[in-house]
Structure formats: C-alpha cells, structure tokens
Length: 119
Image 1 (cartoon, rainbow, N blue to C red):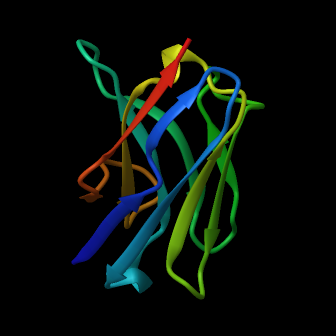
Image 2 (spheres, rainbow, N blue to C red):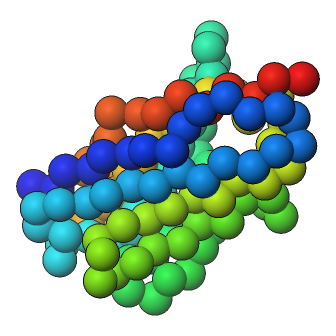
C-alpha cells in the first residue's frame, strides 16, 4: 500500500503561483508513475500532469502545458506541481495520484487539496 498526502493549496489571484506537494509513504518502491488530477465544482475529474518515478519524464494536459511543472524527489518520496500564471478556471480540488503500472487505473489517491484562483 502507498499513502499520499497533499499540501500547498490555497487562494491566489489570477496570474499568481502556487506549489502543491505530495508526500508518499509505504511501498514507494512499487510506484511507477505519480501525478495530479483535479476536479472543479460540477465537472468531472480531469488529468493534469504525471511524472515517471524513475525517469522523471513529465506529461501534461494541454490546458496546463507551459504553465505547470511536475517534479519528483525520489530520495524524499515526494512529488510537486508548480503552478504559474494561474487562471480562474484552474480552481479545483487537486488530487495526488500514483500507479504501479505503465498503463491502467491509478491505484492510490490522496485526499485532495483546494486551489482557488480569484479573478
């Protein structure tokens, strides 16, 4: 089992920045990929970004490409999402996720952290 705990959410004005962190514990050696999803009020949960645990290769949703940067620290068992040039439409609950396989469903989810961007 892997436990994920997010931190770093909050309220920011449009154009501002926030950094989310995700601390992983438990069987972290089983993680193949970590990343972030988000869910805005009244909308479906959507993919934001992921990063491979060993290679550090990042993948991004088109809506955040160029504004968000995903990273990981294997030694600290953490992942982070640096969010710049935030827009009101980025407002959502952000979830840290992890998966043990190259493809397939995400096995582990954090409890979520709220990000609110005011216009």
